[in-house]
Length: 343
Image (cartoon, rainbow, N blue to C red; front, top):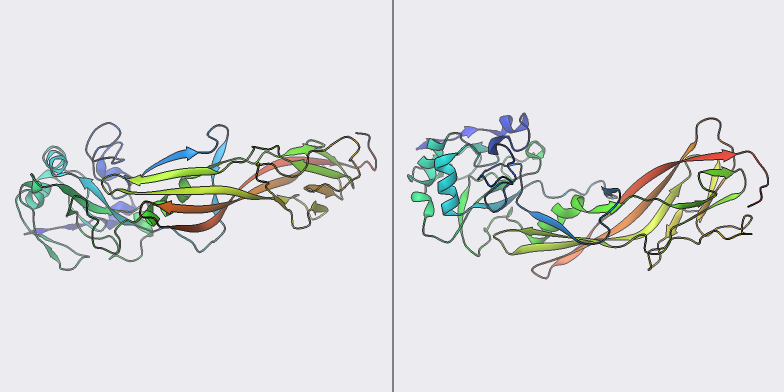
């Protein structure tokens, strides 16, 4: 009988991937250097962008729903029998569960090769039956719990099973088994959207009581779509971020925004507002700002925040909405005290 040791305190004080050695991002049972590894803090979910801009400065969106959070953990397939044999007998330095685990290749081989049962702390039943010769000859995977942030899991029972066997083509019958929605949620903060660089007239320097026009040419904003796949499961999800509005914050209370809400709609062609034309200096722009007080040394910080509507669809025909996301950029705005100007 093997008694496992408590690893949650070690996980909380160690850098991500510490238990899998260098580069412990498990992909198909191997890390980027081709070495087998096992780490509770690294997911095998592969996220790729399938449409949308890829160049220029980019960033991740912030959820408008402060109460929304992705799943704290889930189970993933990690090793085939052959991969586990190789890993156990040549390394064995990883952890086998989010809460219970052990170190040293001998302990790995005891349970997964030599059929020795293991006592666990956080799972029921406490005794887990051992495996014979890594299940060589069988088709399937050994699965284990994965959590992007182990220390953020409050419930010690979540995803706490020791690494376990699942036949090929099957998803574990467990409330923490992955779903297409799990992948969509995971991909939420992997969506990269472009920075908001609006066109201004006048550029960078405005005039008190005269409107500053704000616009973006067509095609500036496009839908961003990413695909998240979990190897060995057939599960995938596509998460799409669609730009729907630009919100302007002039950086001071001494200003008016157009429209009054500060929300400029993004048109179907990706454009925002209307470009300034000669002779329109005294007209009210569909998207813009009028500053009422000049800057005094320090410029105002004009912020432009784009709202992205986020939806998803999955491999099983499921789909739905995720919370809207926002991405904000700022730029300096100097305002001069001149009552009239020729443009």
